Length: 396
Image 1 (cartoon, rainbow, N blue to C red):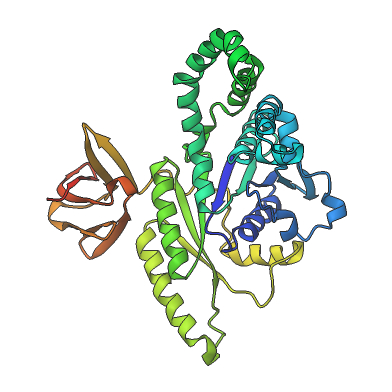
Image 2 (image 1 turned 45 degrees about the vertical axis):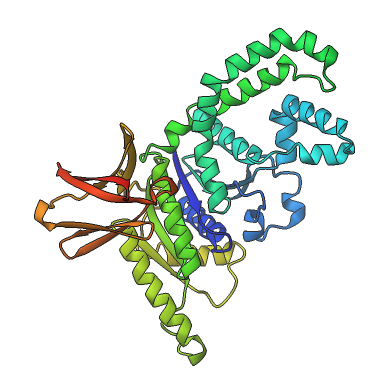
């Protein structure tokens, strides 16, 4: 099963791009599911489905065309289905603080529940071989990064903290519950956590396998949006995911000659060039601004025709290697960059803001650095087997 993860800043049009990709996949014969992981779901709205058709079916996939289903994760139904013990305990604690039943139930919906529920479904569909491709319409960038980092965090918690925490509380619970104003969580609470973890176990391996999972970043040719896309690219790489395409949405068509758009055209030209230079060798695909809102099956189909006018298959594996990686070895930070067919004399590098700039001959690569490395400077570089390793240290 292939997993295609569409992410980007809020409002760039990633839902419609994800929907169009789903339509193209279905047309090619893939059993396709487009799943919304964004708490502010707009997937059904994008397909312009009547509320009566979709109402009550958000907790399960709904087939809307041959080979094409959509799924909006409904957190209220997921809590009853998967989080009953956890939510029940948290709600009871919140009630003791004076909150009403309704307020307590609302407050018991913690950040991350929606993302974890989506991961459970992806794992379930993979095990059951329900679909050939799952297209994930993710929340804006920050939430998407939480989505991909969650499995690793949970794995660490379950291996290092969970057994000890469960054991200690089991021993002290009878005594503590006599004197504490709030009861400690029952063992069923921990059993629920363990059961949830078992349902997502292995998802991190899936996400980091480029043969299975690819990230598609959707952006606009605007400064703030491009900057966020660059940061997203850095952090997806940091978490071990492969970005195989960047999609610049709503590019002004050449047919628009009105003087009103002169500055917009110049600005887009500048940031299109910057985008292609920054993300190379990852391909950048352009999608024009349409005359109308992309809404409903017909217009999403129209977008799909433009998006895949070259006849490409969205499920194809086009990249298997991340362009660069960040590591920490013996307290020393390193950046590893793939530069095949490069000789030592061709390489130059320097620091610019929070970016490491690598020059290979006439080609320049800008590598955004994670926060932990942004204040470091390059001190050494070595080239071995087509891999350039740059050592980073604190400046004097």
